[in-house]
Each structure stands twice: as structure tokens, then as C-alpha cells.
Image (cartoon, rainbow, N blue to C red; front, side):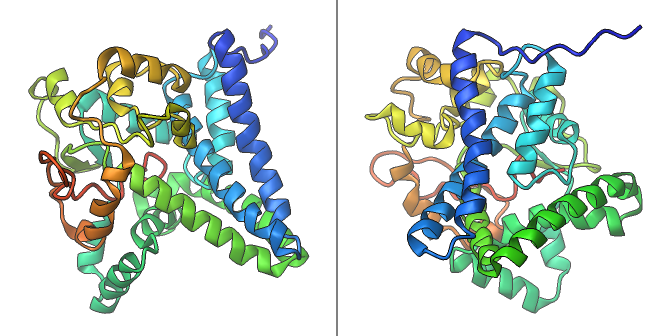
Length: 338
């Protein structure tokens, strides 16, 4: 006789409060944002776009914490939270366990790992496609991130060894298609507003992901990366950066659920998001790897076209403008590398 399913229990007492609020905000903000963008009044619809964007951003980072079993005590409850938050973030075309598997490889092997090489895809594509992608990125439209998310849906239809994932894709397409068909019938303008919110989400994810690492990127299946012992903990920290929203006002880092404290996260991967500021203060205060986002805006702007095809992530310099040569990564979101 099988045991009755247990009620999800948070990792600790603080988690019950902080993760309870974060999960409620992500799910409630998503629902409220969808309702707000269907309203006729722009004073309601415009804030709804921003709420929808931020709720999806928090959901994406909760998927990340779930991958490390940092929300609930039991793995199956973290998996459930990860699946729900992935649906909110629009990335549920791939199963949560696939997302988790590649993200944990990122930590174990100290590489950026992906199942899709968008640069190779663009090099094979007609010239006008490459030109369009470059033009869109120049105009701050997240074309590369759109390709990365769209390929998760398309590849099971066209790649033979991806056919096993097709039932999942069809199921999610049906669910999300029904949802957005209802929204479109209710308020056609809302579909365009949702796309604006989703573009903001992809831009936000791209910005933070761009400056977390200067790891090498490997594609699965494909070349086998060098043995793990060649990438020590020292290597990991030397190639990891903390792009915090603010050092002077730590509460502002809640905008990205403390995801900017990335050196602290890589030092102790099981530490939940609400404990990362204290760990960062203990281990990485004053570390040159800490990059407030105000130091990264210029690099993100200047290198937005170069980043599309450049496989060299660049390097961190010294003094004013130290991030100018930090080109950054592209297409490495844990939600879309599957």
C-alpha cells in the first residue's frame, strides 16, 4: 500500500515566510498581470505589463532555486514548484527535470552547457536572417533569447532524437494556446501587451546571465569537455561574477531574487536565495568579482551586437570602465539551454 502524499514543507522557518511570499507573488502577480493587461484603461494595463514581467522574472529564479532543492525539504515538492514556476515563466515546454539536469552539469563541470548552438544555426541561416537578428539586437529586441526559447518548441518536431519530447510540447502548446486564445477573445490588445512583458523578461534574463561567468561553452551532444579536475574551485570563482543590483541598498537585489550574488551561490549551491546576502557579506565583500549593474549597462549596450556571434566572453579590466571589455555570454539561460 503506497504512502499518502505529504504536504510540502519548506526548508526552514525563514523559507516558509520568504519562499511563501515569493511563490505567492510570482503566481499571484502573473494572474493579476494577465487580468490587468485585458483592461481598457491604460492606467491599469501599463502597470499590468510591468507586474507580469516581474512576476515571470521571479518565477524564473524560483525555478533555479527549485533545481537546487532549496525551496522545500523533499525533491518531489521542489519538482512540483519548479514545474509550476516554469509554466508561469513560459518555459514549461521542456520538463523541469531536463532543465535541472543541465543546470546541475553547469555546476558540476564548471562550463556553460547547451543542447542548441544558436551561433551555428545563424551561420547556416540565410544572410537576411542573420541581418534581421543583428538589427533586432541592435534595437534592444531580444532576438537571440527568442530563438533559444522557440527552439525548445520546434526541435521535437524536426529533430528525430528529440521526438520523445513532442508529447510534452503538444500538451503545453494546447494548455497555453487555450489560455491565450481566451485572453485574445477577451481583449485582443492584451496579446501584444503580453509579448511586451515577455520581451522584457527575456531582456532581463539575458542581462543578468550575460555577466555571471566567463566559462567555456559546450554543446550536448558533442565535444566532451576537459576533465573536471582541470576546473578547480579556484577556477570556478575566478570565472564567476556577482552582478548585484546595489551594494549600498541590498533590498534592491530582491528585484532579481538575489540572483546577482552569484559567487556566493557557486560557493554553496544549496543556500536559498534569502540567505545569499549574508553569505556574500561573509565571503565576498570587497571581492573584485563583484559588479554592480550600473557598471554593466555600458558594456551591455556597447556589445549588444558583438555578443551575438562572439564566442569570447571578454574579460574584466581595472579601474573606471573595467567592464567595458566584458562582452558577456548569450543564450545560456537555464530555461532555454535544453
